[in-house]
Image (cartoon, rainbow, N blue to C red; front, top):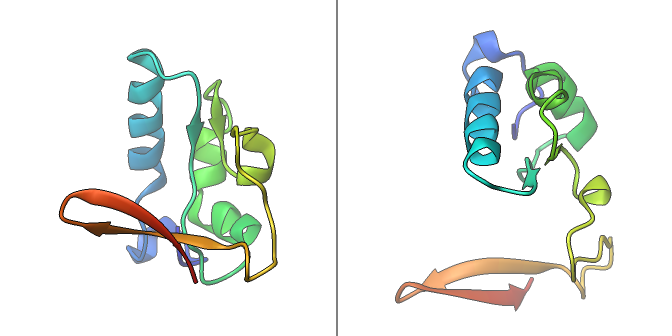
Length: 98
């Protein structure tokens, strides 16, 4: 959902695919799913225009913003000194500051 475009443009994952994967995760025992990306526009606009927000809104346990997800040990911030990025090296996940 990086782009605030309708699904017909094919510039992001189709909302039915996102909803199907989220539903399958919930059916196999996930307690919650967070649907997010690094959008090039406001996340709310991307969720609306792509249709992903509407496609997932009725799936219990699915959150479309990190602010509503209540993920343990995650703090939402705009402070660049606190923003972390995950990289992978030799199969290991390494979190580093930007």
